[in-house]
Amino acid sequence: MRAVIQRVSRARVSVHERVTGEIGRGIVALIAVGRNDTPEIAASMAEKIARLRIFDDAEGKMNLSLLDVSGSLLAVSQFTLYGDARGQRRPSFIQAAPPELGKELYDRFVAAAKSLGVPVETGVFQAHMSVELANDGPVTILLDSDKLF
Image (cartoon, rainbow, N blue to C red):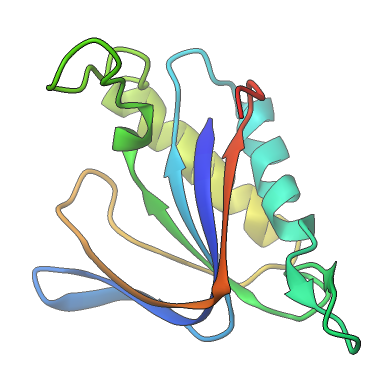
Protein backbone atom coordinates (compact mmCIF):
# COMPACT_ATOMS: atom_id res chain seq x y z
CA MET A 1 0.00 0.00 0.00
CA ARG A 2 1.21 3.47 -0.82
CA ALA A 3 0.12 6.85 0.45
CA VAL A 4 0.95 10.45 -0.19
CA ILE A 5 -0.09 12.42 2.86
CA GLN A 6 -0.34 16.16 3.13
CA ARG A 7 -0.91 18.20 6.25
CA VAL A 8 -3.72 20.62 5.43
CA SER A 9 -5.64 23.51 6.92
CA ARG A 10 -8.63 22.55 4.74
CA ALA A 11 -9.47 20.22 1.87
CA ARG A 12 -12.32 18.80 -0.14
CA VAL A 13 -12.97 16.28 -2.88
CA SER A 14 -15.70 16.52 -5.50
CA VAL A 15 -17.21 14.21 -8.10
CA HIS A 16 -19.12 15.88 -10.94
CA GLU A 17 -18.98 19.18 -9.03
CA ARG A 18 -20.65 17.60 -5.96
CA VAL A 19 -18.57 17.65 -2.76
CA THR A 20 -18.25 14.10 -1.40
CA GLY A 21 -15.82 14.85 1.43
CA GLU A 22 -14.57 17.97 3.18
CA ILE A 23 -12.33 18.58 6.19
CA GLY A 24 -10.71 21.41 8.10
CA ARG A 25 -7.36 20.85 9.85
CA GLY A 26 -5.99 17.41 9.21
CA ILE A 27 -4.47 15.15 6.59
CA VAL A 28 -5.29 14.43 2.97
CA ALA A 29 -4.21 10.87 2.20
CA LEU A 30 -4.00 9.71 -1.40
CA ILE A 31 -4.22 5.92 -1.03
CA ALA A 32 -3.14 3.21 -3.48
CA VAL A 33 -3.58 -0.51 -2.89
CA GLY A 34 -0.99 -2.91 -4.29
CA ARG A 35 -1.82 -6.31 -5.70
CA ASN A 36 -0.16 -8.13 -2.76
CA ASP A 37 -1.69 -6.02 0.03
CA THR A 38 -3.77 -7.52 2.84
CA PRO A 39 -6.34 -6.30 5.38
CA GLU A 40 -3.55 -6.19 7.96
CA ILE A 41 -1.53 -3.84 5.76
CA ALA A 42 -4.56 -1.56 5.33
CA ALA A 43 -5.05 -1.38 9.12
CA SER A 44 -1.34 -0.78 9.71
CA MET A 45 -1.27 2.07 7.17
CA ALA A 46 -4.30 3.70 8.83
CA GLU A 47 -2.60 3.53 12.22
CA LYS A 48 0.69 4.86 10.82
CA ILE A 49 -1.07 7.88 9.32
CA ALA A 50 -3.19 8.57 12.42
CA ARG A 51 -0.13 8.45 14.69
CA LEU A 52 2.46 10.10 12.40
CA ARG A 53 3.83 13.14 14.23
CA ILE A 54 3.61 15.89 11.62
CA PHE A 55 1.69 18.60 13.51
CA ASP A 56 3.42 21.36 15.45
CA ASP A 57 3.53 21.37 19.25
CA ALA A 58 3.62 24.55 21.35
CA GLU A 59 7.32 25.00 20.49
CA GLY A 60 6.73 24.74 16.75
CA LYS A 61 8.25 21.23 16.46
CA MET A 62 6.51 18.43 14.58
CA ASN A 63 5.68 16.32 17.62
CA LEU A 64 1.91 15.85 17.45
CA SER A 65 -0.19 13.34 15.53
CA LEU A 66 -3.56 13.63 13.85
CA LEU A 67 -5.06 12.03 16.96
CA ASP A 68 -3.27 14.51 19.26
CA VAL A 69 -4.69 17.53 17.41
CA SER A 70 -8.17 16.03 16.91
CA GLY A 71 -7.76 16.49 13.17
CA SER A 72 -9.68 14.87 10.34
CA LEU A 73 -8.64 12.63 7.47
CA LEU A 74 -9.70 13.01 3.85
CA ALA A 75 -8.97 9.64 2.21
CA VAL A 76 -8.88 9.60 -1.59
CA SER A 77 -8.22 6.43 -3.60
CA GLN A 78 -5.50 6.91 -6.22
CA PHE A 79 -4.22 3.76 -7.89
CA THR A 80 -1.83 5.84 -10.02
CA LEU A 81 0.61 5.91 -7.10
CA TYR A 82 1.64 2.50 -8.41
CA GLY A 83 2.43 3.92 -11.85
CA ASP A 84 5.87 2.79 -13.04
CA ALA A 85 7.36 4.93 -15.81
CA ARG A 86 10.99 3.85 -15.44
CA GLY A 87 11.34 2.27 -18.88
CA GLN A 88 8.72 4.03 -20.92
CA ARG A 89 6.69 7.17 -21.28
CA ARG A 90 3.34 5.53 -20.58
CA PRO A 91 3.19 4.31 -16.97
CA SER A 92 2.51 0.67 -16.21
CA PHE A 93 0.04 -0.03 -13.40
CA ILE A 94 0.67 -3.77 -13.13
CA GLN A 95 1.60 -3.50 -9.42
CA ALA A 96 -1.73 -1.85 -8.52
CA ALA A 97 -4.45 -4.08 -7.10
CA PRO A 98 -7.36 -5.07 -9.32
CA PRO A 99 -10.43 -2.89 -8.64
CA GLU A 100 -12.25 -5.42 -6.42
CA LEU A 101 -9.29 -5.88 -4.08
CA GLY A 102 -8.48 -2.18 -4.24
CA LYS A 103 -11.98 -1.22 -3.10
CA GLU A 104 -12.06 -3.84 -0.36
CA LEU A 105 -8.75 -2.72 1.15
CA TYR A 106 -9.45 0.99 0.66
CA ASP A 107 -12.69 0.46 2.62
CA ARG A 108 -10.73 -1.47 5.28
CA PHE A 109 -8.27 1.43 5.52
CA VAL A 110 -11.14 3.89 6.07
CA ALA A 111 -12.79 1.62 8.65
CA ALA A 112 -9.49 1.16 10.52
CA ALA A 113 -8.92 4.94 10.69
CA LYS A 114 -12.47 5.45 12.00
CA SER A 115 -11.95 2.74 14.62
CA LEU A 116 -9.00 4.76 15.96
CA GLY A 117 -11.34 7.71 16.52
CA VAL A 118 -10.31 9.71 13.45
CA PRO A 119 -13.14 11.58 11.68
CA VAL A 120 -12.87 10.41 8.05
CA GLU A 121 -14.27 11.86 4.84
CA THR A 122 -13.75 10.18 1.46
CA GLY A 123 -13.86 10.50 -2.25
CA VAL A 124 -15.63 7.96 -4.47
CA PHE A 125 -13.67 4.84 -5.42
CA GLN A 126 -12.92 4.62 -9.19
CA ALA A 127 -14.53 8.00 -9.89
CA HIS A 128 -12.91 10.95 -11.63
CA MET A 129 -12.39 13.32 -8.69
CA SER A 130 -11.27 16.88 -8.13
CA VAL A 131 -9.23 17.41 -4.97
CA GLU A 132 -8.69 20.89 -3.55
CA LEU A 133 -6.46 21.48 -0.56
CA ALA A 134 -4.47 24.05 1.34
CA ASN A 135 -1.21 22.29 2.19
CA ASP A 136 -0.09 23.58 5.60
CA GLY A 137 3.67 24.04 5.76
CA PRO A 138 3.89 22.65 3.13
CA VAL A 139 4.21 19.19 4.65
CA THR A 140 4.05 16.18 2.33
CA ILE A 141 5.16 12.66 3.28
CA LEU A 142 5.43 9.51 1.12
CA LEU A 143 4.60 6.16 2.74
CA ASP A 144 5.00 2.66 1.34
CA SER A 145 4.09 -0.51 3.24
CA ASP A 146 7.01 -2.30 1.53
CA LYS A 147 9.31 0.47 2.78
CA LEU A 148 10.67 1.16 -0.69
CA PHE A 149 10.85 4.82 0.30
